[in-house]
Image (cartoon, rainbow, N blue to C red; front, top):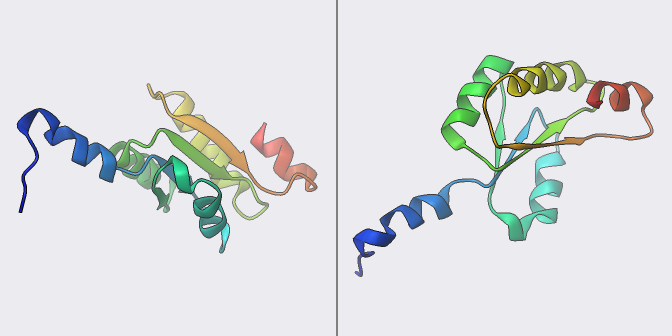
Amino acid sequence: MTTMPPELSGLRATMEQPALALAFGQPGTADRLAALTAGLGRLAVVSGDASACMAQLGDLRPRLLFLDFSLSQAARSATLARQLASAPSQMALVAVGNAAVADSVLAAL
């Protein structure tokens, strides 16, 4: 078994950390996003209320967060987005959902 040199020990943890996260995804959304973003890193799914998601995101520290703004998830995603906007973070936010549903688009804005 080989060991990693001390100067590279943080590299393994960084590689294992998910680069992407999805909050409140509908069934199948995580699978589709994971397939689309396979080259960007591992996708983690966070769930629960906004406070629980904030805690999970604090532990995961992804670079990119997909927020599901489908009709059933729009209010939860909007709440989480507001909380994230007031927290110091370098995480990019991306809204996903059905653009043909006007209420979802408005909630994402």
